[in-house]
Length: 461
Image (cartoon, rainbow, N blue to C red; front, side):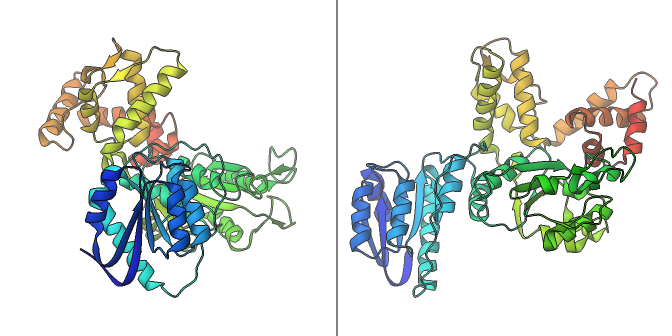
């Protein structure tokens, strides 16, 4: 049973009368008054007449939707906490609702498990701040177009965190494995921020040689080094007023980290070869697939820079930790690929979805997208079956399937080959393919230097 220390009022708003009946019983508690209505107009009237502690409202309402109801409630009663519910809330709905001040956004099918603890948390928060007056500012709507696909609770928590931090200027560190969608999260932060009218500029810190990275970031003067035939503005100048996304920040050389730290401290920098100090106003969003705290301990990343960047950390879950997102992602990629290539619509069978969910997805969403693309190219009918999915479809983490895979590798080795040497070359070659030809990414994945990786690739016949 829910318990409150003082008299509280809970308002339920939903067009489904059966849901209202269930929720009233599910949330009944001592010292809790439960009111309910089936449309947004009546909800506003109730909030205008009665102090309401918590509102649980559906997104789909008449005569206006739950997002507008959220804004009107907080305008009338800033202290009220609003929980919105929807069948499948979109990325934009979750981020925008969080920015507008929603306490939480829940999927309808999760309500039997999540509604009670969420409402209990909201009521406890009201007890804690009973006498406080902390109105939340309403954030105006806008038409951000970032595409992040997923219905899992883990990913929705990412959406909500984006909504909370986007409107500030605090540096953000996005952590996650390769292929999880870190750049999409960075774009969402920018598109839902006050800086969205300016540009978001992206730079991959691991893809640019050290001797060029400083110039790329800060610009250079004519004649400052061989090949500098004219003055050039760097990314910090170009991103002034907007957002600078530093992808794979863990690969940034220590010499450049020192210069980046200065910009983060006071916004000042100098072009290569110049004495003039320039100022910039950028929001820094960084991303890495590495464990930066371990990099700090190993002396490969500056501790002071780590704490400057890690004001807010957003961790992107691996695809294997959110298998419920695979069906909707697969369908999204199917539609996009067939539409782009002018193909007839291809559907995916339930058995093929099960095959996809049995895989461990070391390459995450990027690997899933490539798998669907290959399946479309090789499909022999308008329905994808397990046989059309280019995977070894044994259950993930199965000892038997791992042993079988090792046997297949040994049997595939050329006659007379030194198996371990041959395997090293093949793994290096395959990793480079998965990294789309990016030597730096492939070498990081294999924990090799670039020279070691090139040496292995040179042995590929």
